[in-house]
Length: 390
Ligand code: FAD
Image 1 (spheres, rainbow, N blue to C red):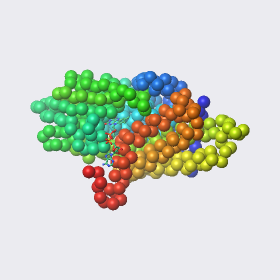
Image 2: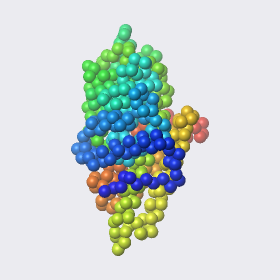
Image 3: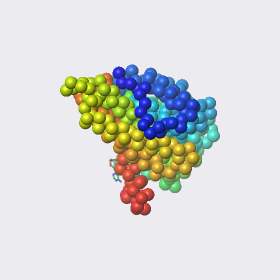
Image 4: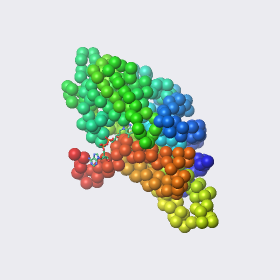
């Protein structure tokens, strides 16, 4: 058994937690303990256990710390720790929480009308309604600014046409926020679409080698007609969509830390127990050096997370800071994953040891919410003043 209760915090990054922060963190840990014994089976069968999304709602783990009536509001630090802890158990569940709270609640909270907020915030926060955020298209991922899905005003309605890909919860029977281009003014606008609306067709993407315990959908929108009241009226352009993504990138940075923490702990536990050449692996010098390298990376990840949480708390977070965190932490998590996998030898590729699931799931984190290269381009533009995107 892997000891998930082991906490590594060499530079006391988490020493300033309040009792409330710790309570939120421990609620997430309670969830992790429930999920861990069964998640491999779901992952193996590529089955999305939606009951666990509702369970996260019950434990108030879906809000990403946003202020939702009837739900505990928690600090940015606690929101990060929750993302970290869920990821430490499983990336699919962390992705589900990230879509539900990070993307959908945040979008409706930032851009929705009071009526929309009253209708959707509570059911999404409690997990009784599954939400999706559909920005990416088959031909527009990193350049989603060029998306082609169209929104045409027709009296008191809008008509949506186009295709979306990789949409978490997009075929789960709930609602989808569709980002589409207004054919009149050319700006990107958001619409809350019930997945049962005629013309909305979604199928789960099959054949994924990672994040197999959550479904992403490919969506076809064929003359989907929605009332004007479905429009997220405070989202005026792509810049507004980007605002929502800044905070979710922070969440991904914490998730990368959770995966890395699990992998480090698994490698350390294994090094202490597995013997080769007459002594524990951990008694060999090279193994100790690898543990030290992993520890140094992990500690840097923790410090970046805590520093960014402080910026969020002070409401001074800059997009480039969120990009730096995502860039650094997903890269570091990938390196830790490769080392940990190797340190378990052949056992490192067995699902029963959990390591290989984390190794794979980190690949998705590395790509979504803006790839490594896209974060690098954001940082490069800031450093040089030259935009190298186009
Ligand atoms: P591409 O944009 O085609 O990129 C391919 C490669 O080219 C990458 O290495 C990229 O870094 C590189 N590249 C691209 N442009 C440049 C450039 N200018 N310079 C240098 N290199 C470049 N989207 C949603 O809207 N909602 C979701 O819920 C959602 N969930 C997802 C879940 C998973 C598991 C995955 C894999 C994706 C999800 N996505 C979602 C989509 C995700 O945001 C995109 O996959 C991501 O933005 C990258 O787009 P792409 O896959 O089309 O890759």
